[in-house]
Length: 460
Image: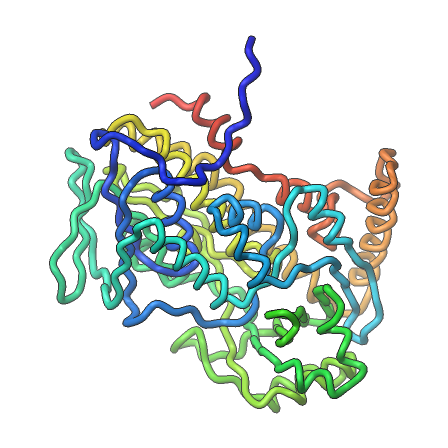
């Protein structure tokens, strides 16, 4: 049998006949919507992106991209510009809430092993890169375009998108990438379904490097290429540098005290935030003293649904609208980029615009993505508990396991391949990105190989 070549991503738009060219509408111009636009344009289909906001922009602070994510970003032919926008992270340190080191991971070695680095971006910078690439490929991006409903013609396998104060748009395929508060998800389900609250919220803070550098104790958080986590009772904190160490990203994950009714993002109270961490590592207090104001975000997830695809085969969900997760695996954006890459690869393979052909493409897309994303969401919720243990026996056992797995990892990198010591089980490393947490499974993911495997196995 001849050796099959490994499938590779499409680097330039695919040339395809009109008979197999889909008119695609993507709802939402966030990271997921733009990633999907790039991937589908590279597959040879024209794309219109509808964004409800009056202008295209992205708020927020830092965003972490793990090797499985940066591998996909590179495949979209933006690899030359990414390093200038990213901070390359080489180490991960887990500390207890008083500042003592529990365990570390060599991100640089893991990046080398998996063929792609760990990158940290300011969200707006990454969004800008994706927006420019989508427009370069020919995306028609329309702002102030609020989708109010979608009608489906099951027989013709088309969708009609109703837009507030605009003419309706007809498409062969509509992708709902409108985020955690998704209108598209409600349209697919035929009912209202708010996101599931997790009991946590986040304070997200960007500190100016000039302020941080005035304190010699804090300089390390800018100069070391590391992400630092402090785990403590009911909460944890995260720091990493951004924008060539001109800013320090600081995130505090704490119990949700936001009003039951109302927006999921609100102005925070600096004194309240400082009070939550007053007994913690004094260096956190020093960082918080540099913070003039803060916003707080309620952290929600999306529970699993039976299918992401409408029976008409003219509509599917992508990203947070399907599988919003806690940020505790640093994988929300990453699994969304995986969605986009898989969807584009599936649509690159269709031979016609028929309902059956779309059904196969969307069936493989869902088969590749649904279980994997559900697993990430579930593991994120497990990490919520592990990261926030009160001092006591469970916390001591967590720390013991972390140190034990660190020794195993060190031995592995030096060539050791023995069995795990007693008391350590594969998949249970609390420093979740290491080999015996989820790192091996998470980082090695190849979207194109996944599609190749399942495409050959699936029949209409």
